[in-house]
Length: 221
Image (cartoon, rainbow, N blue to C red):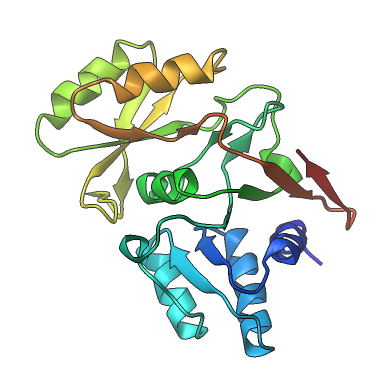
């Protein structure tokens, strides 16, 4: 069984009847969603909140009962992937462009479980470019301001067109190299006019489930 599939499916052990569950986005969360769908068919009674249009579409195809964030006061558990995880369980997310919705759902959750394969575990964040979601207005100025933080900042493109998030915003991918102080950098970026949210998830994660190519799963808390 592949490392991503093992990690994604293992997290479903923490999903219980009656829960409101946040469904993440990405290649590892995909396996979580598939497993949850199987459990729902077997009688698992949950309601789910998707973190992206892509996840919403998949959940609907698999007949997972969905609810909107406006209909609930909290989420019991969210299971999502990450692009990088450091030893303090801080994350870089947003490679798929869903970072704002993912962070809103994660913040509303009593518990956040991250599922990854071993390649996503790092000593220090920053090898993966940090996604930052920004509004269209003044985008060039926001890009310039991000570059003042000593990073290489590029507007994300898809098929040669500027990428738009599910919220109809741009994504800037910022190459910082090693990020020594994720919490401080997250605050600085999020205080910048034009920025909607950064892809740094700091002190939000309760558990990381890691699959490896040897067929083993480890749990970090």
